[in-house]
Length: 410
Image (cartoon, rainbow, N blue to C red):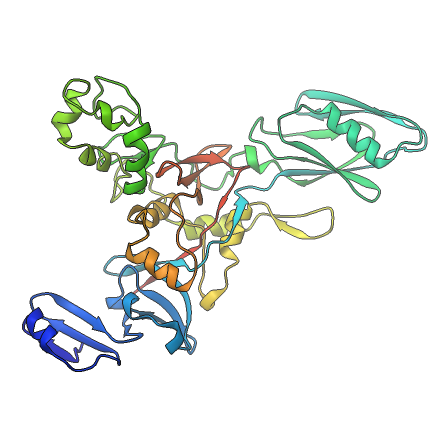
């Protein structure tokens, strides 16, 4: 890079009284690169965490965080750098995309009811049967009520009354429904039971590896939030060692209650750090760092709903991929990508990523739960859980925040 100003040390830099209302890049030999002025553009090779990605005359460019001033530029900000290596820049989209389900509910269209004479029918779900009856002269609303009364309560069933037919929906995690029928009626499966089934095309990962080398069903993702929760509300177990799944609270992190932990870590903060997600990944750790591929597979599944509209079977992935900013491909981050995204966000949002997102859109809400595109089992997918600051799993039928990411290589 060509520097406009060079200084031997910071004293020389501070002694320079020239105005900095224009974009100036300075090289201070004892400190490093300093950026002054407004909307300083840097090449992608110099872009770092917190730098703002913009579209300038149709091209991707990068503006240093602390120089960005929207009032003085016509470029379109689309995201922020959240991670970089020598040949890769990872970017998070400027806005969250709301709360949606990972998988859409199972939906079944049923028609052919004899409302004039009434009738009795049997719903068969897998091997379970449920009978319902409606009287002569009944309305479809009466039929819907009878069906809902026949189905098990508290398991996500709902019934919609339509014009000439009804739609039965289930939004729940168990059991997986492989067959559904209603006797003597016409049944059309609109959307399969993706909320309770393995996708069949994603690799499912049961555990996360922590920095301590042990794999468990959760691992800390955001240091400050993980510490904040567990130092007060962690396990009160005693006599545990590093291999134990449960993270203990600060009050029992002492030589009397947990001498092995104190001997291994010295401080509670070091103990918390060693229970974060292992980075970089290694054998037995979640290796799913390809949210782009996951998303491409997920969005290929759609269904035609009863209204004739094509809808996504996997709404979270669809929401992320629907971002069109900058003619860039966006996707739902994998579990690994999400753990990187969440790791260094501060609770007071003073970190570079949060400051940049605040300038152009929405911060990454560190206390909210965010979807990933990674699957855990038939009814769970991985999330960043903001209540605890960790990577864990959530039911595919639940609604959580969607945040889109992308990556550029050089």
